Length: 242
Ligand SMILES: [Zn+2]
Image 1: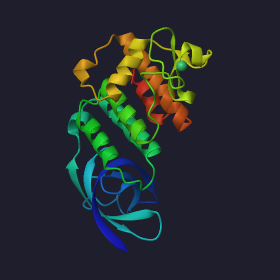
Image 2: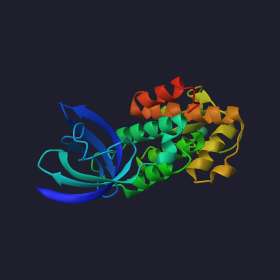
Image 3: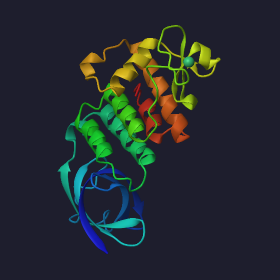
């Protein structure tokens, strides 16, 4: 039996039995892990108000032989209250946490992934910052899309450009042979700028360009995850372009 403390972001929680919960946490020290929170639904005192989705918490865990850790204590570091006052930001935070849960491998320690998610939750959590988060998450997971040149031949010139998630991103007209979807250079430019870490004020683009960039990125994520994320549907339901 090993005891340890971690800084964690609560990615998701599911009810278990009468009074317990199973949590999925992204920890700074040990990557993603699952924890059993005994009495989390009943006891008002034990984890009062701490185990909320997207919260940044300090946790004390015990690990046994199984994959599930036991949560002994939890204290709130940051509830990201700014986020919780805005339905759009909440929906994007849910999407970012769901993507993290799906894409991040169990116990692959990744302080970088933790910083990326923490920065997103503590920032503006708008549609541009969400795309930045997704591109970062893809890169850290070895799924970095090629945006500034053709995946096959490396051409970066003009002419018709296509985007094909199956081939890993951008394709020139010659290599595409009508695979993928046509995309404007400006839309790929927005994604490439975010992938390179450009500040938001430099990523200025008309609505149609952002919409096209969004659609390309969604297609890429869906292709690699094998399905649409549930929280993406929710973003659409509340009228967000994401
Ligand atoms: Zn090519």
